Image (cartoon, rainbow, N blue to C red):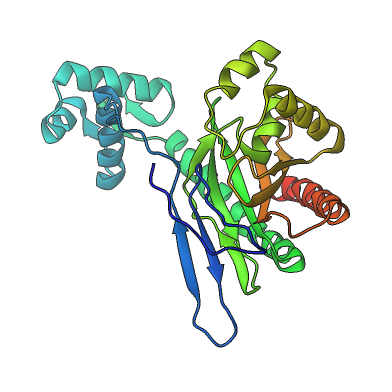
Length: 293
């Protein structure tokens, strides 16, 4: 892990260990400068390539690009896929309704299910775009950076949108970074909803590298507090010198699908101001539910 020191604020020096951030400062009369902080350690292992998945994607791409029905043998020859393997993949894709099969001509074409899948993805992207103005308004009102995180499976969250405050000093968080699902203010929200017992939570908790020490009992207490008040905070454990406040964005089934979070310089606000901001973030989470679902 490589450490880079960022500008100090109110006598504090930021040195986050677990997330990619940029602290932007524009002193009066000087051009904007920024300090880039290191991202969470990327895995040193190479990604595992699953060949059948690669072949399936290649087939879907080929059928979408050609736009005409194709025989299995022709698809296999064009993509250099074993003919029996290609046939089995095509049969699976037909069963999943993303490829159509014509029994008379024995040809395959991109199915309606694939178009519907793409349509759903485009719709989600458009909805996220609609969420941005609300996030920007909160960022401007409180002088914070507002971020939107999406849950990835059972163990990760990914940053998909960030809106920075227009003030002279703000934290910029680039999209795409991933974090353990139990980490940060968002992690305290998920922990209270995952249905894990204390030992399972402890096992996952002990694998997280915190920016500064926090006991498991203190973490659980903050999880329970977040459950009661509808928003969670992380006071410098996620990243040194950074206070994060997060609220859930639930799907129609009541499960946390996203979290909306704010990050700011630690120590900038008193307890009453933090409480006010927490309630505002919680309200924003409720408003985003009607937009994202």
